[in-house]
Image 1 (cartoon, rainbow, N blue to C red):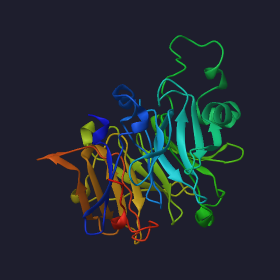
Image 2 (image 1 turned 45 degrees about the vertical axis):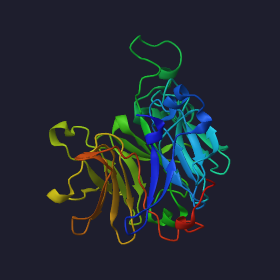
Image 3 (image 1 turned 90 degrees about the vertical axis):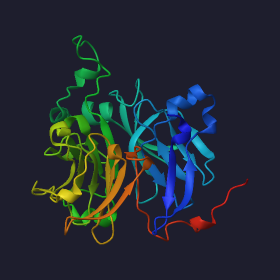
Length: 339
């Protein structure tokens, strides 16, 4: 594939294509340089009509494009996986300073979408593991693992955590989560099948749960005081069924959503979900190339989009987001570009 094939499409409520952003970055220079930046993952759409993307795996990029697909700013580092906005409009992402997105030298970073300037940084090694014996015990990562003498098989760049999401608890939801504070960070450690809430100031792990999800993505705080999780269900070569699991962090009681055969979906990697007004769940199923919406109250599939590129074949969808009709500053149908 070439970078020219990666786009962000905007559809209106009737399903008509309204606008397209092309993610072939002219700032990347040569075709060889572009090959290092062709796998977008995280996506944030701004009210101005600009989009912010980052990469995954070997894709070194964090960039903002205007509505005409021209880079506003672009950073050439391993920013990766899902991004989330906080209530003061900063954006959170994971960043690694290793050989690719999967080394251990991980950081939660908050940056300004206007400029790309970094506003906050929390190190998974220094701030989470080495600073707190309790965190070391939870993650089974003694501080010596990252320094000094180690056995030959204890590789410094082994992908132990596979961090893939971080989001801050909004103040509007804080009263639904006793024991948590506004700004506390909900993170996902995929290779541990663990989600955790981290104190924004002390960096201690306040709460965590390992499973029943397997290699999960996209944990979210919800309005009913639960945390919902996209369960990739990595054992699914046998079962081939992902799902959404919710958990009450106070009682640790879990619930698996959707039991109808009509709502089966599967993606062994990536994946995202979003709660819509009225309780409908908007779900991105990357490796099926589908976006679906399901009513949890009835188990009914109420919407489906297939990224059809050939007869009987869907192309990959890294990310999707539902936006309210009045989201943009200007009507997207009025968007225009020179030439």
